[in-house]
Length: 110
Image 1 (tube, rainbow, N blue to C red):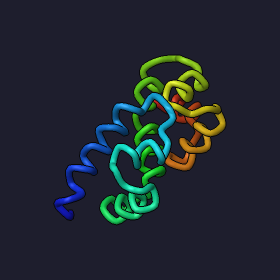
Image 2 (image 1 turned 30 degrees about the vertical axis):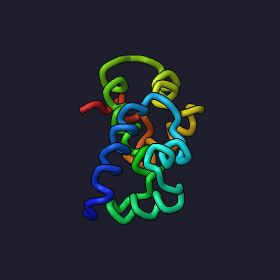
Image 3 (image 1 turned 120 degrees about the horizontal axis):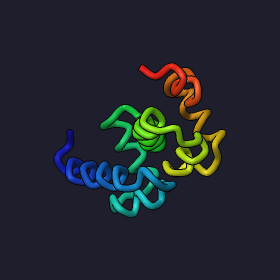
Image 4 (image 1 turned 90 degrees about the horizontal axis):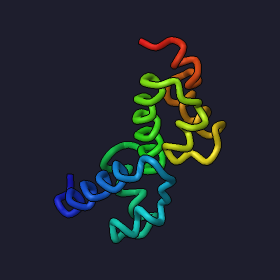
């Protein structure tokens, strides 16, 4: 990895981790990085192989497994806790990642 981006990427990952419980815009992330959002998108994808928005969404979805398996909280509450504005947005993203809905996943807990 290019040395000049290592520190920037580390800061961005920290920012994403601290922001899993709320919506996080590309504009906000690009300001943190000090790069234009278009350039940041290209650099992030070149380094990680994933688009930045997809990486953030995957991280939120994977983190949401903890309350999904560890509680009986309603799916809508978990979705809102992880920055999804609508339950259906969360369910769609979850299904795209894991091939089943959060409810199905909860019912088939490992």
